Length: 513
Image (cartoon, rainbow, N blue to C red):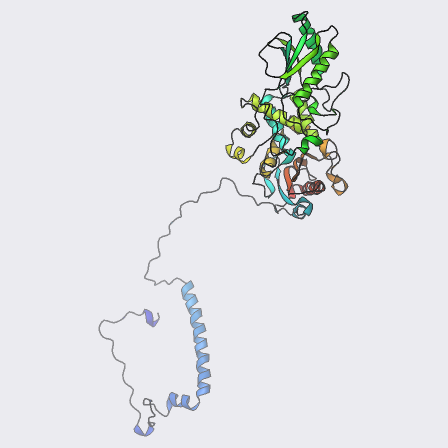
C-alpha cells in the first residue's frame, strides 16, 4: 500500500528530528540571499558540477515519470481488491424502438444529363424525370414552379375530356324548326370537325360528319312536316357558350391569319380553314357566318323540289326548342383526341375544353377552365390542382403554367392508362414514327426512335416535350422538359431531343445532377 493510502494516526503528527549542524569549520560564508549551505555533500557537488547534475536530474525525472505513467495505467486498468468504494449496481437500459424495415443503401447513380441541358439553344431549361412504376424523381431542375407548357397542355385537356365525357361521347350538330314559319335554326355545340367538303372527299378530320348529310336530312323532314312551305330564313345558333368569348388576349392574331388556330365559336365547319385539306390554313374572322353560308349551299345542293327559297336570309340567334329536323354527330371522342394530339390541333383542343366546362355545369367560358380541368384531374388533391394555371385548352397562351414535376407525375397516369387514359396514351406521337414527332430524333438521337412517346409543344417563347419512354435498360420513365426564353429558335427542338435521348441512354442510372 502506498503512503498516500496509509491511514493517519490520531492527534498531531510528530515533527521530524533536526539534522545536527555541521561544524563551523565546514560552513561556507554566506552570500547575499543565500541560506546557510554546507560546502560539502550533495549541494556542494551540485555547485561544483552544475551541468552534469542538471542532465542527471532530468534523466531521473523522465524515468520516474514514465514509470509513474505505467503504474498509473496499471492502477487505472486494474480493480483494487481493497477498494473501499462499492461498485455501482448494473442497470439495464430500456429497449430501444426498432425500425419496421431495415433501411437499404441508396444506389449511387452516375449517368448525368446536366451538360446536355446546358445547351445554349435551350435558353432556360426546366425539367423532371420520374420512374413510372414508383414515382421516384430521378432528375428535377426548376421543376416545382408553374411554367408555360405550350401544346403539352393538350394532354391535360384530352384527359379531362375523357374523364368528364367518356371515350364514346359524340358532339351533336342539329337543325330545328324556327319560331316563325319558313325559318330553321342550325345549332352548333362545338364540333369543329363538321365538314363542308362534298361527299366522297375528306378534310383533315377524316371521317367527320358532313353538312351534305345534315342538309339532305333537313330537306326530307322539312318537306314532310311543312308541305308546300319554303325555307326562307336560316338562323345560326352558336350560343352553347358566349359568342363574345372567342379569343384570348394573350394569343397572337398571327395564329389565326397564318392558320394555326380559329376563333373559338361553338358553330364552325372544317375548323374554319380556307383549305380544309391542310392542317395549317388561314382562318376567317367570322367562322359562324362562314358555316351558315356553307350550310345554305348544302341545302340548295340537296333540294330538288323547290323547298329552299331563292332569297334566304341568314342571321344569328338562339333556338327556341322547335321540331328537330336533322342531326349529325361527330366521331367518338377517342377519335377526336387522336386527331388533336397527333397533329397538335389548337382548335379541337379549345372546343373540347369548352365542352368539358359546359358539360360540367360551368358554362363553357374560358375563365371556367381553371376550375373545370384541374378539378377533374386532381379531384382529391387540391394542393396539386392549385399549382396548375389553365388559361386555355390548347396551351397557346404564355399564361398557362404547370410545374414540370407535376407534368412528369401526371404522365405516369397516362402511361399506366388509368381512368381510361390509355386513350390519351395511345394517341400520343411516337419519336420517329408518328404525328409531330415523325420527323424528329434524327442523327445521334435516332437511337431513341420508337422508344419515346410524347407530346410536343411550341409557342413563341418556349419549346416543350413531355411523355414517357422505355429506356435502354428497360426502365419505364416519364418526363417533362420545357425550354423557355424570348426569341427561342426552332433548333431548340433538336437540343430537346438530345436531352431526352440522354435520359433514354441513362435509364435507371440517371443522376439527379
